[in-house]
Image (cartoon, rainbow, N blue to C red):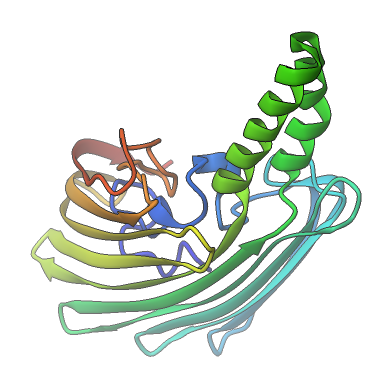
Length: 263
């Protein structure tokens, strides 16, 4: 559902997912884009209504470390509208509430235009990465002695919480404008971090996509992220952060040129 509402279709720089989630990038994605060891049921009706249900067993989730996970979405696609709502729930290694997301997103196409609007809420108080690192890495610091060992372990935990604890809402607005065999794309994405030390950011993107055939296209995308407070997002791709800026609050910009073939 998130992908369907993304102006840049989660495949290039300026994608909605670029600043959704913590600064840890793919490991802290604020969207559950796939799951190991899961079963899913989908239905598509002739009137444009569709739905999906998914359940993930032990060691499911995006990186295969959830105790369990499940999700559902409802979609309507007809008469120019493509609207949907989705919910995802994940539990950490011992069953505590992990990544939980709510998504509302959609688009409306008319003439040469396609308008997009969406909101996405994500919260993760018990990241599987925080638990794994604290259980597997922190004990190794005992080798540094009774004074330095706990200090290093505390600094590790603080860094993990800063990058992997999530509590934010993101918003996106944008459009496509068809121009012959190509289309102009533009969007604005805002990440509103609700934590005490927020990593806020606003991302601006513009691009042009030209179809060489039904399955092959050329594209160019320019993106700019304005970080605020503790934000250190860097331009990435495929709905993931590109890493970190050198210091909090520093802006990031990027230009992407490529060719895409759909198999």
